Image (cartoon, rainbow, N blue to C red):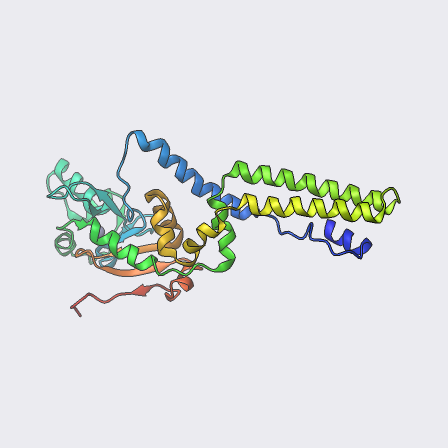
Length: 297
Ligand SMILES: [Zn+2]
């Protein structure tokens, strides 16, 4: 608005008012989601709970392969579990977990009825024993999370996302304050222009004051982003950015990026469904990427 006004009236080159909005509404909303996750994380610090990177976004390949789904049609998820033999973290199929609990309570009822009772739909032809035999083991969380990290770390961030990511690392109060100072400088400039065109200010005085305002404006820009250059390596290389995110932030990012990461009972990644635009950024086909069994068929 102010730019066109200036161009219409002033033949002098000005550096003011040509800036894009610092942060778009959409970006802000996204940041708030991430920030809530961060707040949630810090609030929980007193009673630390383990954060399983791949729970929820991780899906059970064995259930999918044998036609076992949630009644809602959703894939059966992997859940974190601290119950490894040597105290290491593991993942288990949620259906396996629930089925185990049901069976303990009720003896040995009809297998399909058990699965239906815990909210699953199964194919008529389901071989319950085969399904069970593929659910004997827990998955080592180190293997699962390692495969996921190897998958996401080569991500190339598009340059147009950089400002949003930089903004995420800024203090939101600082952003608001900066917007306020910028607004005041723009008001001063508008007023100065009016005074000049109404003949209340001489050209020499106008030029001098305009140079001052421009200087303040540029100072504002550089002083508010002192860590811009510091953060640049994180933007150029996603794997370094990944390392500085909290576990909760990493987890939320995975939920944003992927529809599902399917692991079989040997903790092998078998199928990846990435959401747009992450499928493209990761070089994955839109329908999902299948992976053959290592050393298998
Ligand atoms: Zn399963």
